[in-house]
Image (cartoon, rainbow, N blue to C red; front, side, top):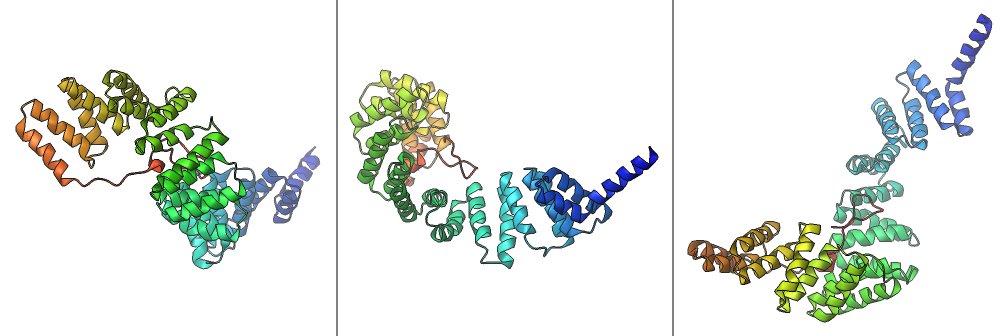
Length: 374
C-alpha cells in the first residue's frame, strides 16, 4: 500500500516537469498542461518561460483573466521574452479590456514596428475604445494588406465614418459593395457617408436600395425617412417612419420625427401624443422636447412649455431654436429680462452644422463586432 502511494507520488512529480507539460500540450490537454506549468513555477518562481507557457494554455481554455496574470508575471521576470506582450494584448482584447490591450500592442510595436498582427489588433482595440480616428490609422494599412478581408474593411469604414473621414468611409463602403452588392447594411452605411459629404440625393438612393433589398432591416426605413424629412419631402418621410413603426411600434426616433411632421403640418393635437410617446421611449431626443414645448406654448400651457423647452436646452444648448422659443415664452409671461437673455443667446449662436443621418442612426458599440442603438 505504501509502495503504491510512493509510486503514485513519483509519477505525479514526473508529470509536473516541463517535458511532461509540453507532452500534455501535444495531446491538447490544456487544463492538465496548465497545471503542470503551475507546478513548474511553484518549484521555480523565476521561470519566466513557464509562466508564459502557462498563460498560453489558460488562454486556450478561455480563462483570459488568469492568462493575462500569467503573462504579466512572465514579463515582470523577463520584459524581453518573445511573444508574451502580444499574447497579453490578445488576452486583454478577448476580455474587452481595450485600454489595456492598446498598452500591450503599442509596446509590441515599439520594439517591432513592422508587426502587422499587432498593428491590426491595435486598430481594433482603438475601435473598441471608440477612438475612431486612431483606429482608422492602424486599420487602413491592415485593410490594404488584406484586401479580401471584409471584416477589416467594415471596421475601417465604420472608423472613418465616425471619425468624419467621409472620403475614406465612402471608398471603403464602395469596396464592400463590390464584394457584396446585396448587403443592405453596407448600402445604409454608404448612404450615411454620402449624406455626410453633402450628397443627400445620392444618400437617399443608397437607403432606397437597402430598403428594397431588406425591407425589414432595422432602422433602414427610419434612415430613409430622416433623409426625406431633411429634404422637406414630408409625405415621403411620413410613409417611411410609418413603415419603421410597423416593425417597431416604440421606435423613438420615428415617433419623434413623425410627430414633428404633424406639428409642421399644423396638426398639434396629432403631433403631441406621438412626441410624448417618443420621450417615454427615449428621454434624450431633443427634437421631441422642442416640439412639445412649442405646441404647449401655442396652446398657452406655459408651465409645460417651459419644462419641455428647458429640457431641450439641457440636451443641446448650442442650438438657437429652443432659446428662441423660451424667449417667446418669457415675453408672453411678461418676463422681459429673461426674454432678452434668451433672445440674446439666439443672436450670438451660430447655426450648428447639420449632423447628418449618421448621427441619427445607431452608433457602434464597445465591442468591435456589434452595434447598439443610440
